[in-house]
Image (cartoon, helix red, strand yellow):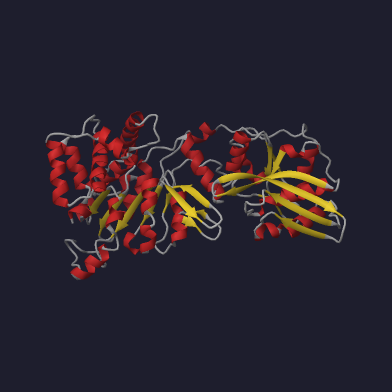
Length: 507
């Protein structure tokens, strides 16, 4: 007898509906799964066999063929266990239902028939709500993310619960959809508060400008000057996530299997800080079975690279294209996947190997050749893609011992939110979210300068040897400084401040 049920799989970040065909025929006992399954799917044979027996059903001692269609899409993960088991029960008459094809079944089976959670339920449920009229049956532990969409979703703790849902569809009610707006209300400041940072007035202002315009930031200073502390303050002054941004981040973490059961919706901006020994695949994404990398996991948040020159050269250079296009494309022989990479890059670096080049108290022991070699680890094209670069000097004892109260993140965040609101109005109707994402056309339109301001930029362009990309990025930063100053036009002081944020060009 032939039975047909539906399941779903994730390739990259995109869900695909999979038709699970189960044929139980005569012959020696045998179970075969075809349709381009990976090792995890092939191992489901033993999980399904044991789960059916331990749930009080009979596993048929016959020849069973399971086909996962379409056959040209690679099937990965244990999420097909439930659909295969239900297909076998339906094909052998142990499960009687007339509308089994109305449901999409996703879940991993344990040996006693319980359902274990699987990643990627949120994008699957969004796909069901938008593209199909099918209902979804998922493990109980996936109920949080499954309840965020309008699709009819039923939760089950074990194989027997699934049988009850399918045979008595009216007796069990689907999950109630939660109000996503309520989850975003009451969002508190995250990260370290700026009031904990003593001194560093210029670095704090650069942090505010970076947050207001979404600009990439590089902090250069001696060890212990507060570079990492400043970077960890950035999330506390960034605007809160919108509902669309929160859903996109949650989808990514759902696919990556990093979504916590008690937190179905991610309401805080991600802050990712990978170690400098990380591989290219872990930062960019990919691997034998491609997975999202740190750049994708930092979408709508911050990617912090501490000790930037210590990262491998191929890792740093591979970031150049995603920093421009805001997407990561991972190509393999069989398929090509595109992941979002809408992150804000924040880096920290020492000025030399020993870390004390230019320090007023400790003498640098590096030779000029060593300093040049250390700085050459950061290529010109990569530095061109960093909008703001500031020096973080040593904090004096008087500043550390001062009893003066530093400005808190909450007040800085209000100015940042106001500047972002101006940018939203400016770029309404376009795909641009902030000043840092402006293309050449928008730079010419919204960053127009003339007179003395133009002369100042021309002088800086010639004296600093700027590239065309650095020229545009200075204008973008100047536009953000003007937004923070609530000015419609870019004035000389705004442009001069933006030029001051190019310390590597000045060096």
